[in-house]
Image (cartoon, rainbow, N blue to C red; front, side, top):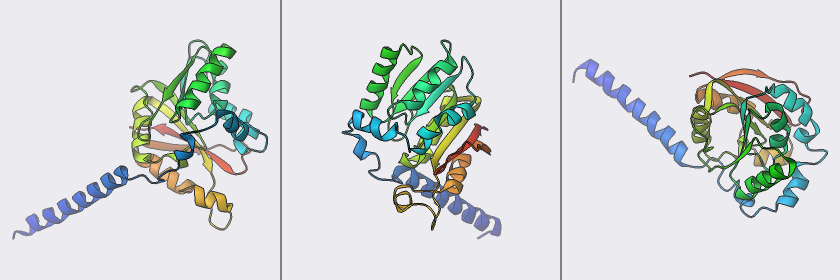
Length: 232
């Protein structure tokens, strides 16, 4: 066999193995069942858990919102919106010409947010029920994608990141707030519940076509705030 043909064959096999590995990873959940408890969620009980003093992002919500640097007219996606804490805080900042897409996999949460928006006169909020592989937003429809304590709930992070990448306009940004996961330092709950630490998250997001920008010091105790830009 010609040497160049042998080299090409080896290279082709390597590419095939890599393709099959990535495809397999996308087809298998990295956190099976992590979102199952929310299928029959009690919204009132969830509000008590998510919007209470002592929860890191709730205690620092104003600092977090300020660090997002929202401007009137922007389109923002609050991905994994839960009970809508940040959706409601973002709404007046982007104004009547802006949009806040409140995205969640749990339809009960989305309906609660929509009903609350009507009651509070927040007319720029749009509820979106997503699935485990896509945020279900139109291509190039948002300027900022925001996730708070959500990344570790992505069962298919490659697929979800691809859908976020498509939804962002050129130069759009992605913010990830999630739990610090450090062996020997983080609480046992975090080590069991949170799949990946910050370094892994950064690697996964950058591999999906984003450029790491910075980490914002917003006073968070248990979580981190990192920012990316759509780079291709």
